[in-house]
Image (cartoon, rainbow, N blue to C red; front, side):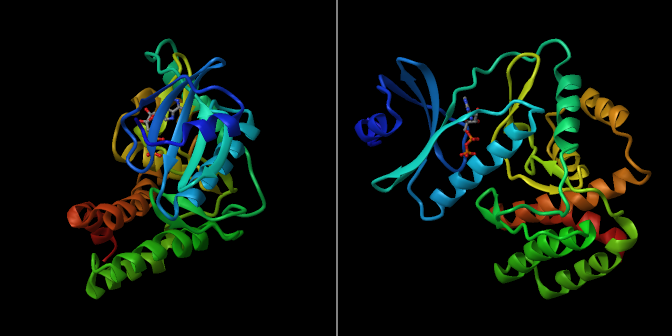
Length: 285
Ligand code: ADP
């Protein structure tokens, strides 16, 4: 029914796939719930050219999060290709209602994730934000990493796609040139990297992180994304702030970090994101 090569997949994974049910909600991959004699599994599948590399990046990110031992994320059961398909097979997470101290626990576990550090910002491989490439060359300076490997890359992409004109790009330059006066240097922190409300599931009292775009950078990046589109309780931000007080000027930095995600949305989905972007860069003209 799904057109999936289920026989070959069963053989590769070493289990019998009894039932396959599509799961809705994903915007990039096809998603399925598999029933096997060992329990349920979650399968991501795609057939587009970059798909294999995207699933490999997702696996790499999930493994980095798991290595931290700080916060739940689905275990990777198997990754591979069969015929035209690339697959990522994960532990199936049963969604539950958020109960007890869910948001406080989530904040504490995210703070723990952020306490994992490295010598440089970036990661050991490039990855993806949505379907866009995200470069992660190690850089000991957070300001130059964020300016050159995050904002500049997206601005150039917007120019190339005709979504930003050269006048608008010039306005960005003013902001880019003053970033070193606005952003402090920080210790590299392990980030989820794409922490919107669709990228965690509830296991009851604890959050389960899915779909990471991991790298090491300022922990405020995850806070900025969590604040951008809603879906996180105030008690999440309050608890995080109590555990890990931020230097003064957080709200200004949050806006600057949100620019990255807004530019990504502009490049993925079009000009409707421009007014939000403009409101931020107008402050720096
Ligand atoms: P995409 O890569 O296309 O963005 P998602 O990772 O968002 O796909 O997955 C699609 C949907 O499947 C999500 O909305 C989520 O509800 C659900 N989901 C994701 N991972 C799991 C999992 N490990 N177990 C159960 N459900 C999951």
